[in-house]
Image 1 (cartoon, one colour):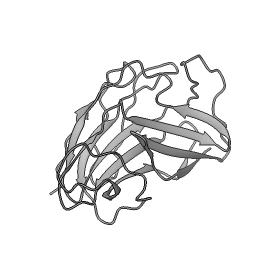
Image 2 (spheres, rainbow, N blue to C red):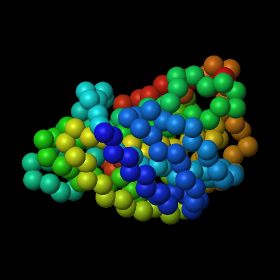
Image 3 (tube, rainbow, N blue to C red):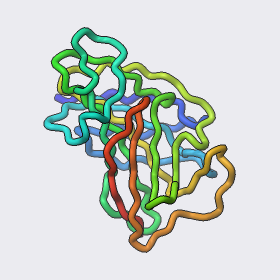
Image 4 (cartoon, rainbow, N blue to C red):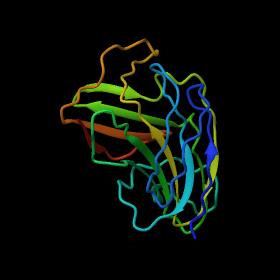
Length: 195
């Protein structure tokens, strides 16, 4: 049985509730908020994981647990779809999997997370740009289990300092790259398209 644990995280000064996901499959999350700031908070859920993919070097720093090896805690990024129709909002997921044989404690707070979207050399969006506050959230991840934080992207651009941006990301089948960062580790790339 998959244990679901949904925790509201203060993100960007907005208070909203995102739907939990089960087994890495996101459900229909309803984003709220307005403007250039991130409009929703990540929802963190625990789930079983088998043979996770990703670069083993993309790992957060576990803070406790004897025998908890850093290179066995893996960070991956994914989207709920490969291609989005006009007006559809991508659901970005940051997943942390513990491949150790012992539990590992990981800080999954907004103080450690960043959701970044680029297109070629163009920096489109960062969840850190308009984040008013950040918080720590320590999670103990059991062996073979995962914690996932979801973020519904509003298809908006942001810049450092949260200055207003009038230009929208391009569409027409343009390709975008999503990377997730936790602490000083960055996930492998997840590629998607916007129509």
